[in-house]
Length: 172
Image (tube, rainbow, N blue to C red; front, side, top):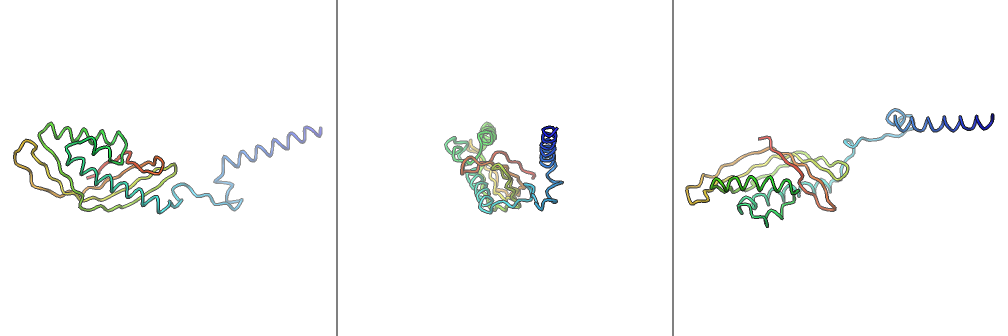
């Protein structure tokens, strides 16, 4: 009988521990523990700065890549995933087949928000002002330069100490 009481007591303790672990948000205030969600944790300002510098380097080198007409050695310097580089190369190749070349010059970059999350992931929102020129690669007349303002978002991931652009999109 005594052995049965010990088994039941241990079972009860294990059951309570598992229940508390599964319902941590319910029990943690009773224990005086305030657990913060990943969204509430303040990221390291250094990681935010590094992610912002990576986006700036990506945009600067993006202009170089378009100016080069898609030179793969220039593409290798882009701090971006192979998928992003391939998307850009397809765009430059399309322009080349049309007899055009695009020159991009970043005039202004404003980082609107930076979210650094767990597992070496970051997302940045930007407002960018670009000078864009479409050049006729066949010797015809070039279009005049125009300015464009884009709102973009970038998803970055870290590989070791380096950030890389994994995806990006512009809203206009």
